[in-house]
Amino acid sequence: MTAPLAVTEHAAVIHDAPPADMPLLDVAELEKRFPVSGTIGPLGRLRRRMKGGPTHLPHVHAVDDVSFVIRKGETVGLVGESGCGKSTLVRVLTRLLDPSAGIVRLGGRELSLTPARRFAKDPDRGRIQMVFQDAGESINPRFTAFAAIADPLRRLRGLKGAALTAKVERAADQCGLPRALLTRFPHQLSGGQRARVGIARAVAVEPDLLVLDEPTAALDVSVQVVILQLLQTLKADLGMSYLFVSHDLGVVRLICDRVLVMYLGKIVESGPARDVFANPLHPYTRALVDAAPSLHDRGAGRIRLQGEPRSPIDPDPNVCRFYGRCPKGTDRCKAEMPTLRRFGDREVACHFAEEITSR
Ligand SMILES: Nc1ncnc2c1ncn2[C@@H]1O[C@H](COP(=O)(O)OP(=O)(O)OP(=O)(O)O)[C@@H](O)[C@H]1O
Image (tube, rainbow, N blue to C red; front, side, top):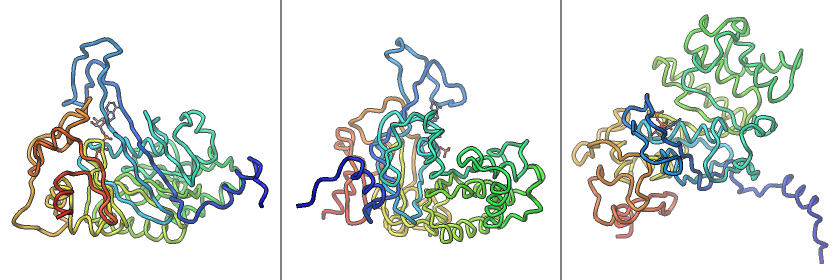
């Protein structure tokens, strides 16, 4: 009989040999709520007077019980209307925000319960990097391109001198940014060059997962194509996984292996991107596809979204979030919140979809 491993030996075995099928990122029951105090000026439609004391604070449920995985080498798309919680979700994953609840594991190691401040000193933090929508806004205007790319290498890897310069130049080369431009400030660069700086800054620390929040939305169409090609090349060369947030379903269909569809803080459908867009199961996904000019025109039977989403403030846990806007909604949808159910390699949270797939 094999002697039981001592705890430390056991931990080492787990660390050295993760199971082959272990996902790179494993997100379980993630929640992010924002307290609504008095009025929230810029959030217009959420403006609301606080009636009770602090114990009665209402909350915006921006991310509500979200679970998904990303496997090594996968590109997963995250789509949904403005305000559905995409940015909040990725900001929690990249630890710009602390979660209210839930677990995030990266390569089997739990991250969520580490407070953001402590996590800032954790060398593992560099394993998830973010590329922001507008590199011009996310890069410090007083930093040259060199300083912008060097910053995370200094902070997260403690590099300096020749080693730092070598890593910065390597990242610039990988991202097609001429070294001569490294001395320039953001305002002296074109939109495409700034996007390359933003990407170089993220890949310089050799992350496992790149979170891309609308990385090409601020660029001209021709530049978008070039940057998307660069991202594809980098992924293949460096073996990274991507979480790709986008409003452009055409791009998501093109570059993503799988897609997560989010509505009012919840994942309502997920599956292989091509299948989901070719045959949406959730009426909300169907409406998104029908409204996307970059996908085919579905003609008759199109679903057009009517009305406003329900309020994200303390939503009724028993009512489907899409009820009221959904053309397929029934009494069951306002009495019982549908949960994600698996159909083959798809998952969908919808009573109607459940009925038609079981016929
Ligand atoms: N700091 C905050 N305080 C209160 N509510 C917030 C805060 N940040 C976001 N929210 C709310 O959380 C919900 C989700 O917002 P979020 O920005 O994550 O959506 P989104 O899908 O990324 O939208 P967009 O595509 O426009 O960026 C919205 O109702 C938003 O108003």
